[in-house]
Image 1 (cartoon, rainbow, N blue to C red):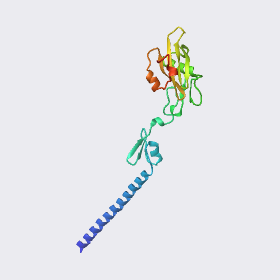
Image 2 (image 1 turned 120 degrees about the horizontal axis):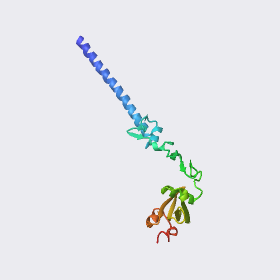
Image 3 (image 1 turned 90 degrees about the vertical axis):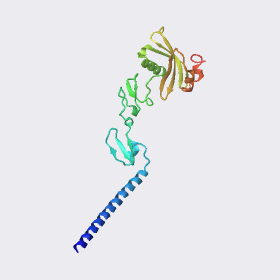
Image 4 (image 1 turned 60 degrees about the vertical axis):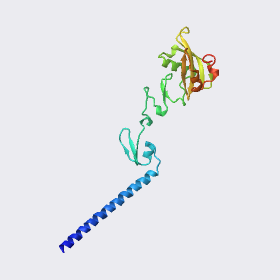
Length: 204
């Protein structure tokens, strides 16, 4: 009789363990299914979307967010205020250094330079490490966002040359200056210079 009781107790114990394991299995599978369904509800392709989907964020540097099997790192360059330049201007907030006014400003809100000549003057002065008083700029042709002209450094008898400049957004950039040969094809194709600007001083 004792043997029967022992066998019965053993079977009950085994069945109880199996039952507990089955319950745990179904609970775990339910959680996995729930997580998969939640992940499928969101189209996550970057750190910000991962956080917005309610996923956990690891306090590393940079921070990381895990969505399903994927992990996304925070783009530090996108943090406003995290990209100050040597003048303290915050590029991500739209600020750039304005040398004539000696301050950071947004060029679409406030003009930095009085005119195109002044902007090109500061561009060339910075390029050749000269003071703006030494750079004399004269624009001879302008068609919309393209200009051509001459530049002298110092007194009128000093050496100088020609220049071509293009407007990119709110800023003018000198793409050629000097007296040497010029890549006319590049000026036409890459910078869209019209022949009215290039001929006859720069290209045939």
